[in-house]
Amino acid sequence: MPSRPESDHGPMWGPALPGEAGAMSYHDPARIPAGAPERRASPTLPSPILPSPTLPPPTTTSVPDPTRDLVARGLVMTYGRSGASAGPPALGGVDVTVRAGESVAVMGPSGSGKTTLLHVLAGILRPTGGQVLWRGRDVARMSDRDRTVLRRKDFGFVFQQGMLLPELPAIENVALPLMLGGVSRSEATARAATLFAPLGLSGLEKRRPGELSGGQAQRVAIARALVARPGVVFADEPTGALDQTTSAEVMQHLTQLAAHTGASLVVVTHDENVARWCHGVVRVRDGRLAGGSTTPLPSGVTR
Image 1 (tube, rainbow, N blue to C red):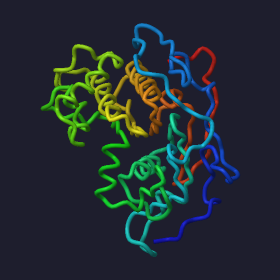
Image 2: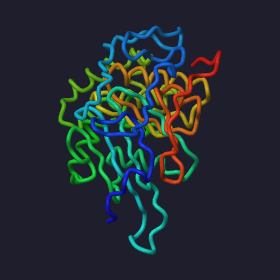
Image 3: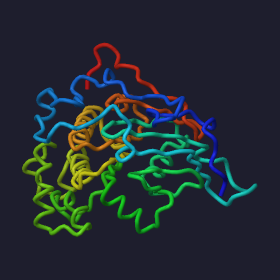
């Protein structure tokens, strides 16, 4: 395994931890488009896209918090055998800090390493080198069992196709992570039911995925990702199969509920309109970070 690369292998992304220098901040409240959630107050949302949520406002802080931030340092990911036969690294020394309660879009061309980065941060892949620190533990050094538990309890996931179980009604799809964690079916479904109204899904609890529209199914997937109140939600092209209008509605729901449950949000997307729902953007190219963006929305653009 190669040694941990130095920080000059790629620019820093995210606010610096105490004692660090050269970090690049991505947070800029001015990026939040009209209709997207406020981060420190109850949002005022346009009708009829989404009813006002009943969830409490998030508790975020401008001070770095190692117990709640997701911190990665010197990430290297090489596929294939080590040595001369190994291909170029999918990640070539990446430093990332995802602050508690913030939403971040990861963008880049196909093959740039953005999905690999998400999978390493989420503990799906074990990196060739570097660290992923979550609540004082290095995810990269956890056992397979511990990483499975981590993904079930502390991390939530939204995929492009939703990945709902077709045999189960929506309410049980949402409750499934809780039941897998040992929560009784009655309690799990009761907790799952509280998310249907904020997501505009009231009355659809007993419908199976085949009886839902694409946007409705994706909102059920969002509820499933958030039902255990995870610390971080990872979304891989969550609107890739949706039209532009439905995509905006799904991103509004996703960013709003993630903020109001206090979860950080990492979204991999190729769509600039999707990225504009997040506090900030980082661009990946050839396995390295190409810099962040905090450019406000163009005049007149709303979501």
